[in-house]
Length: 472
Picture: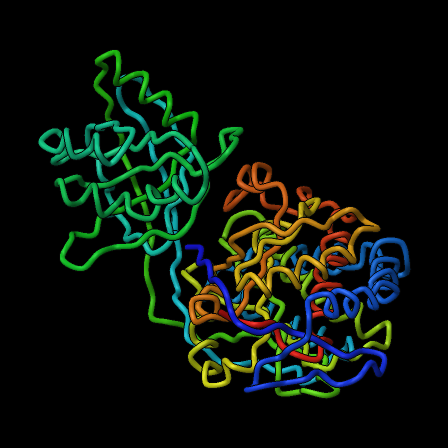
């Protein structure tokens, strides 16, 4: 969900280069916006140094190479798995060896689900083995599977209209893809809505902008008081084929087998590292991505790229000998794919210090060629962020869009902390999202360099301002 915040009396600013102290009256900064613009403009040379190091200098391709080493070594990193915990331990060591400060692990409890063996075979009107991916937290089928006739629908409304036909069947959703936020409701709620009308299982058309017979997994949610039924995603191609068959009056029968199991919550960690602030060390600008992934592909795009440009941002700043006034904190979240489980526990642990968070940033929508920054905050904070983004003119990435968000930072944004997320090519992103195709082959080192430069410039400059971003 996206949250939008408005208006605050007061403005941030700095007095860089001994330009004098900000004047306060009743704890409200009286600096003019013109003074703020002039102050931010003083960071032009620093921004160019960060860009040069990340894009053209010794650090170019570093985030890509670091990511490739991890995902080629560890592979996918589902919540509760040994591979995720191995990745966390490797990253803990990597951050220490990189010379970052206050590197530590913060314990959390996270879900543990495993898909097991799974298959779906169309028995009528012809034999056809279907590609499927069970959805996170789904229950399994009986060992012999579920064999039943299919009811194909294109929406929840159609399911309701045809509810009497659904009892004892497998509901297949062939919902059209509009955008991710609208279409994903079928993946998340499909099993519950099908169970309410007496279905035995549900199969959901993958939430993808493009498919080459690729199923896409993801989390789904059961509801108290509603029977739990097995649920999985199928390919766009199979969903459309069954829709055509049904429109001709063909009887469709599927045998579904799923060995999925839910286990007790597992021990895990959020991984934290910092560049400690020189003047206001207790105040924080947080940069982040999540280290866990689904159990298919390599989790390179979702969200290895976001995690590694966040690490790279701190590395670039450290390598240039920069130390912002405020602490720059890296958090690599765990169990984001299960609904931000690790991030929620981090929020519960740290929310007592919420007034010390100037900005929370999360990259979880790919690290392809950046379009700009999505931002949620007061209009005065937005104006400041727009000035900061103007420092990225050398690489022509200066736009500030509405609706900064991220599963792991939404807790803070809801509570009034300004939030930002990286925006790039979402059509490409959702072609590979949660599928076997999410591998290093999708990633582009030059685009990751640019994304890292954006992340480092924004986080450093905002962390170095004399005052925090104003809130509404």
